[in-house]
Image 1 (cartoon, rainbow, N blue to C red):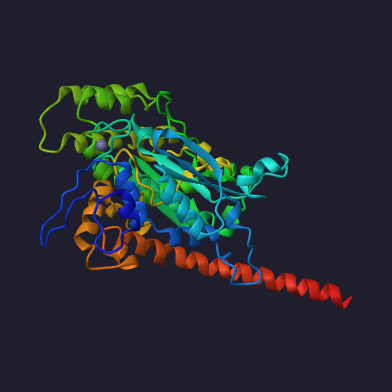
Image 2 (image 1 turned 90 degrees about the horizontal axis):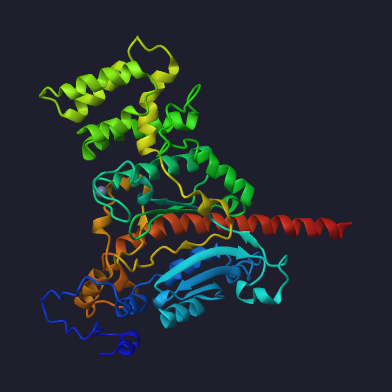
Length: 449
Ligand SMILES: [Zn+2]
């Protein structure tokens, strides 16, 4: 069967000529390839949901809708062979769907909404073509934690280090909701080594670059001490946001999980990294002496040594706040979220769209529920080949929407719709109606003069 048939064929769709036999598991090799991706775009990519999201209620059903809105959004495709096309725009689901199916992009990025159609930007002067709206976005990448994880490095990630992403989601999500009052927040697995966050409230989308930078700096309040051997940097009382992140999330994570999973005190090289953060020589030499002695204890060495350190730093001997603060400093420097700040500060920065497939892993970039983010397991994320197997197996039983629902992507789509898209569109509709009512009232008032 050719790929054309895959795209056009409805009923018994087969992928790469693999014949489904009754009651037999069809194995598709794990690798990502363009044919699989084409089948994914033909059968599974949630065009309607994505388009509804990007329209923000401007669907033409209300007189207050902005018909040009969605067509002013920049979309970018990265094609096979790394060909990069920016400033594409689509006025309808049909246009979007057609382009994706035709071009089969290895990556789809979403950019800002501009003052005019980005595809026609060259027809306008530079000043007339300017970003006017953009979700507030965050990008957190596990490779930025290489100095605090010993299980993996670079783009690799495992169940021992992934929880760093989980606590990052908890800390940032709480701040966005409680401190900034945002409600429409989407967390997405980036497909390989991190997470993306999309804040979609109207007031977030309309932030200018200065405001974005201010929020980013607020969330970046703890600047870490990676590679700088900086001793205690936390002076005075802890910033309330840091204090809360520390007490509610990071302290327990560090003490109950992270020191064990990374064996932070298991050898000299590792514990020296921690001792370097303590500015008081008498403390570090006392701890060194204790640990070099290396008496066998019944306790786990990591737990025992962290206990010694805390006991010594927080004992009555060290009244100076700076020294006591070392314990918090150590926890924060290992666990505090590390944002890629540049992504968040500028409206015109691109970010990979949810439900793309990562070409290196074949993983679909599915949403993560922040309320259950500890249950998220990157190794269990549906891959392209798994989904195609499911399609082949179930292809004869269901049609259209059901087909998607019956794959392991179904759960993610249902979450996207019910927890993110529906409440978002409801509030967009209310916003459109109220601003329309205000405008109508205003013009009535003008007429009555
Ligand atoms: Zn790891």
